[in-house]
Image (cartoon, rainbow, N blue to C red; front, side, top):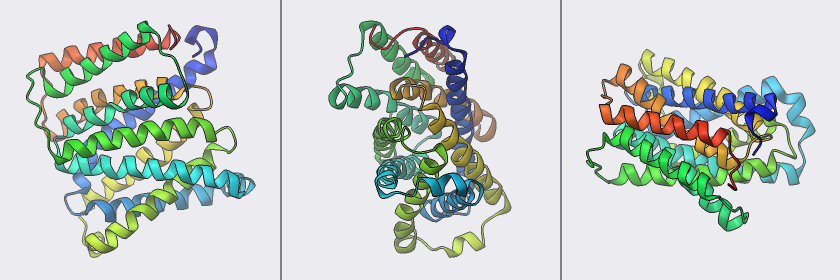
Length: 296
């Protein structure tokens, strides 16, 4: 990993990831407004279908150049895991406390690190492992308030599955983004996710809910489509050309902080003093990770 001071452009991409975390963090409580009148799979089908259409219409010239089976196949594989991350993540938000769901989805850094060691033979240094542990403790303190009151149900299981899928997504994205443009990878990810959600929406839900949805739900849907999907995917895929997937997943640990803050103002979920300390630990860990090599 390049130290920030060695290359200003690398610092720019790290800021892109933090901006993505901010967008996602706000998006988590915003999603609750969508669920006031829309069902999960119907909403996600529409969300990712619109995002796919956006990418195809705006960036079609770039995408057409990548229309080769070998390239699209790799992007589709990434899309399957990204689809899983979003499907499980939104189910977690629906069935668990938003801050707890944010914490569990933030553990993608653990899965990314484990998968990197197993499949890519990456060696993580003691200092980096200490930073990783610090961030995990910080996330727990932030989301659980340090009380140990952590009920583990189906919603929490969905949160962990989302984190695991995201970990695989980052590793595969870093691999395939070298062969295609960020526009192509983002478009295929969105398209595959929409296709994965559609059967569940048709079998388990009623698309009629979309026509009777509340205005606030449509406003929230617009935010998560353009912000949490189109903008976030672009920020992520552009940055993965320059940053390691382990650092990106570690930086994603900032998302629970933004989720907790946004949930406080939007949903009234309180941030405890212990949670504040946890936020400081997370930020300290991210700063430390920015200036050391993962192998140290």
